[in-house]
Image (cartoon, rainbow, N blue to C red; front, side, top):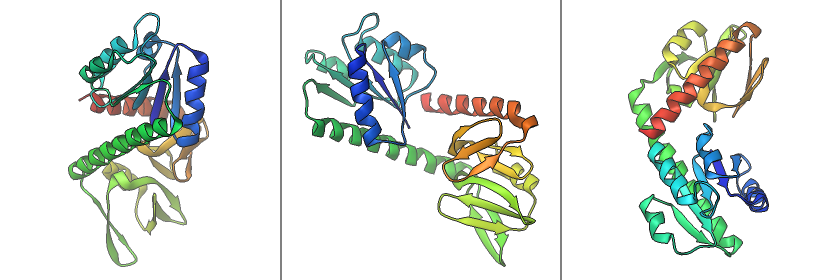
Length: 243
């Protein structure tokens, strides 16, 4: 989840950033000094805290342009002005916070916004699961159905394949190449012993991919192609959010 703060005052940006880091330590925070800077960024925030009075594009114009790109983005106006509240409805704002306000109100609004974001993502995930067939794996004499979306990564260990989901690990005898073929385009094989799901990547470097659960090795010769594939994945993901 990406949360952006767009305000021309540095102190205000830093103040909101401090509050958000305490509330949502796992979120990626993006700070912008102007509407133009936000619009030129390709970071694609999920939630935006937006001031109205800014040089250049004001908050309303910035919001209109953001909304034209992404129907799902959650816009929260945070301003000292109360005379734009009706315009805020026109751009589909989630909330309109008028300064000064209590911390309790700020936290309530942000938690509700995050709740809406998570509920929307859950629905999108459920719809996508309907489109992709489950993998049927035979492990310990049992047939186990695993959906590709639930796989964080897979690795070869002691001549077996171990599939790691967020809440379980499944071992079975099989071929990584076959799993790679069935898993689909949201997976990448950065090393002969690993297959990773792009959706669960937290960060990476030339030797290691760090996932929301565990990590995978990166073969040096695969790094450049991995970066290209991951960028394409993010582009596809961004395009789906706009549709």
